[in-house]
Image 1: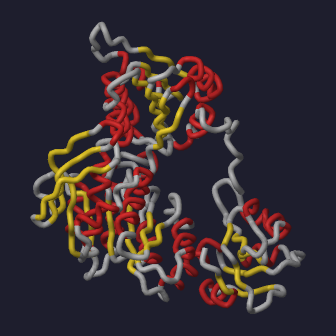
Image 2 (image 1 turned 45 degrees about the horizontal axis):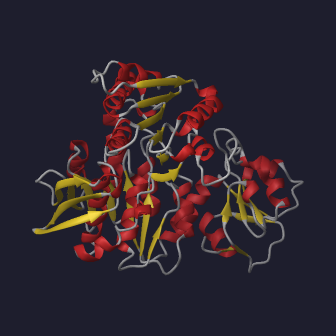
Image 3 (image 1 turned 45 degrees about the vertical axis):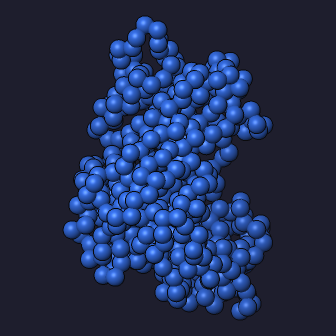
Length: 478
């Protein structure tokens, strides 16, 4: 993180200092987890759904925090705290004010990315492409919330020319409007609108409305980069004063791909057309959604004046496609780790990757898709039917995932391609791991994917043959 001088923190947050702290103090970073504090940090006491960070202020100070940012009400109730504290009305709001204060003083172009699926991969691909020509900062991981985005912005180096920021906005109206007021993006990218977080938002139309807040916030000299193949995203063109650039496979898109050919796990090739300039390209990304990620990155590069040749240099690193990791598994099996999260489109895309495998067994370990609301059964049935077409061994994990098993069992398969289905409850994690360790064999290709709450990345860690077993999931941070 960019070091934060105490005077800037006070000016940006509107807070007041209680206790002794030299005016020349500079904080290496703002830390919200007391266990991750290193000497000199500014600990911010955030009230969350599970914890109130104020209760960990003593722990943070003991770990060497130079000061803590706390609410005025807490500070008044705890006069015994001798350590320096920066007193604000509400720490989260103060953090957002500080990020907004810094953004107003930065000479930088900001790209904001939202959508139901593919935000992080799009962010990585855009940053990789633009880095061929510009000094680029990208938000780390998936820090895209009302807390994560301000922290990302505060971390950006002073000499960055372009900031590529992931922006969430999946849980309530007004979230993206708030994030936009902080980031002040000139370019807005919308990847898609899918039935993700329906349990919170109610309808897919409501999800689309939340995403529209990002393009509505763009200035008249800005650019909205929209998925023209998604009719809900294309409709956002009517809701922005910025110039609109569309991408996709449909011939009506300004930046479009055609003649897409999969090369299995080696990537894919296609022809891309940008303003009449048509080129043949090959990229190491896999899966049907990989073309969309490449198009998003190249549409953004085009907006920033790059030509196709220099953009392609940024798409040659397979690690840009962050959601799919290929790692060795037990007994010589190949694991496809796509455990970050799960939605119907991403599940179908990952199963398409598995369908490209030409030899050995195709194995899918699929966990629940959560927060689907009223459509959870039909969405699980859709994925289960596709799994029944593709895989040879289906292993389900969780109660909702049993719908995968039922739908897959109803698929009519030829006699020489029998389907084996095994199901495990969520509390049977170790039994699932033990089963896979004994069942998997050389030449098996194994997809693992499920909702974030299942923590299936820990199952992958336990199965990997190139690292020591990780054991149980690490306890969540304060």
